[in-house]
Image (tube, rainbow, N blue to C red; front, side, top):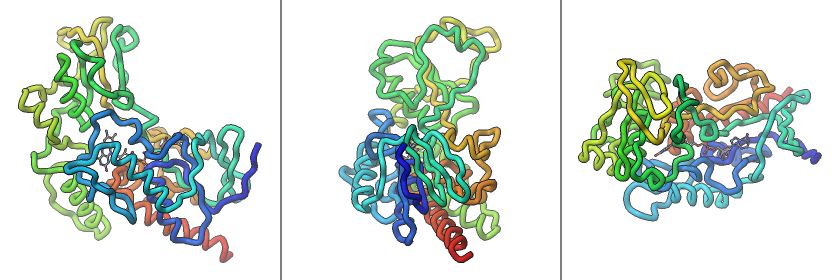
Length: 357
Ligand code: FAD
């Protein structure tokens, strides 16, 4: 076993949330280290499907300090985000150890002990920034095990080729569902299943507008004001070009969920059956927090109770980038800056408080 010198702050993760937090830590006197289980930089963007593009321009898709270069007009491809994050780490010389998968975190007196296989690190404060990509969520439907066809989560979807000529069910009413449906429907017969009618944003609304609205909401919340905003959240469907094109072809028509799986397909409550070859689940993710199990902070819903980003039950533990529950728009590139900054301010204050005592 390698026993390392304790650091002030250890960040678990190496995606945009971890890098943004590290950016602000660099401006303090605190020592810090990042542990990421991927072999390369880029976090979850490395696993996005082949055609995945951001839904906002580079100027609205950057993390703290340095704007994403825009290699081509339009919305950046996921490879541009991966390049950006790789360059960002190098630019700020962030101390990242890869690949290191953190299995568990425990206590040794005032220190956290972070265990990764046979390696161990200790730290005074801990930031969990492990994202959600490694925890794809699939809702349970009766008979799912009987279904003989293929089932795939959007986390593992790459491109439509494998579905050519098949009958495919796309489940999920968010941006992933709409975008995957748009391209699979060009090569396959598709059926779109969403629990509620999908919420399409007007054509002229893209990520920019959503972030502006999220910021307005955040400001109003801070000031105790109530504001009137048009309906539309970060989960609503942005009408990017391929989705608009699918609308023109008439494939953006969604049905409410079936009741159960059969061996050949699915069956609705009225007995109607549909034979399908494959199901693509675009049904979202859960926070990847298994490594915090021993700290007794995980609630029944798989989240951690936080005051802003600080764990209520563990005052030296912070969670960054998981979603609205860890800060407005914190699971987006541009949105994570605000929570990364406030998290580092809190950490600096908490550790300074220890030194003063
Ligand atoms: P991640 O990128 O997942 O980084 C976490 C890192 O921690 C990963 O490298 C992971 O492997 C590692 N890790 C996990 N567990 C451990 C462990 N136990 N030990 C060590 N390392 C671990 N946002 C936008 O701003 N604009 C968009 O257009 C946009 N489009 C999106 C489209 C899709 C389809 C999806 C799913 C998301 C999109 N997002 C978009 C949202 C968001 O930007 C991404 O989800 C982003 O990757 C989240 O960053 P993160 O740093 O929180 O997590």
